[in-house]
Length: 30
Image (cartoon, rainbow, N blue to C red):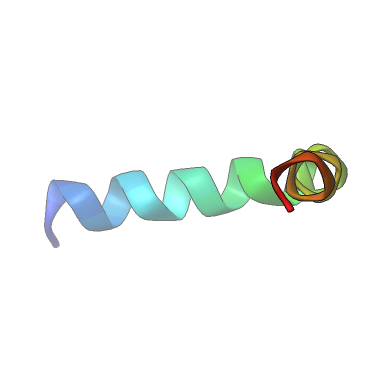
């Protein structure tokens, strides 16, 4: 596996935890 793939998977796991925060950030970005 590529290191980038592991990194992306790690970000996805964090994304689940920070999902609500990402939604809030999207509101400000739009």
